[in-house]
Image 1 (cartoon, rainbow, N blue to C red):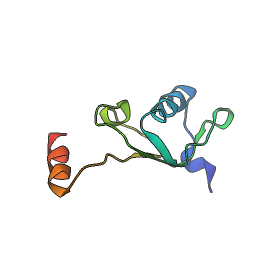
Image 2: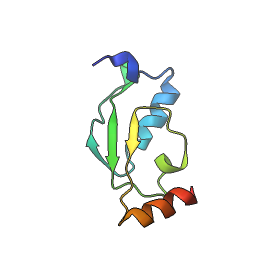
Image 3: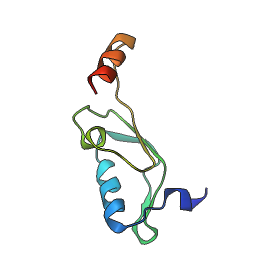
Image 4: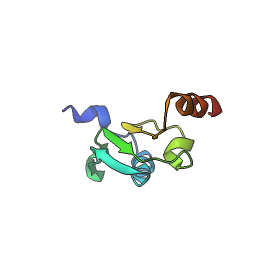
Length: 81
């Protein structure tokens, strides 16, 4: 994997992304290397709409997944954003 794709420009940016990893549960990825300012591509599951990762711009390799009951709930959730 090309580590440059997931390298953050500053320690502050890295710290912000790492804080998002506490939202929900890590399904894939989640590895970090502060010395390289690296965050692996990560999928988060069981994320709540009120979690910070869902309230802010992510600007990193993190994909939060919110579970909904059906397509109508999904459309309602999307329209509420």
